Image 1 (cartoon, helix red, strand yellow):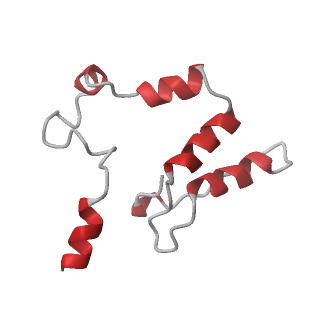
Image 2 (cartoon, helix red, strand yellow; image 1 turned 120 degrees about the vertical axis):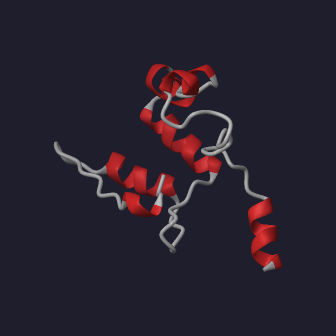
Image 3 (cartoon, one colour; image 1 turned 90 degrees about the vertical axis):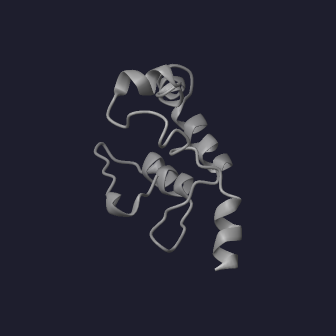
Length: 96
């Protein structure tokens, strides 16, 4: 289907850019190819608010059909006034 192909061709494959080039179970090889750099930046340099803002800027959305913006999900949990917080995630659909 041409419409589907046009949509997919415009996508930037960030999470799978090294697919077929590195061993998917070799963490050392992943790190050698800049793996975990974003995680390091989040842990060492950014506040939770900055992380949520970057996720919003990136336009990440849920993949379960509704396409709900991920930064809104994360903001809702961040803003919740409670000593305990829970995130329920259906990881089967590949949500960020």
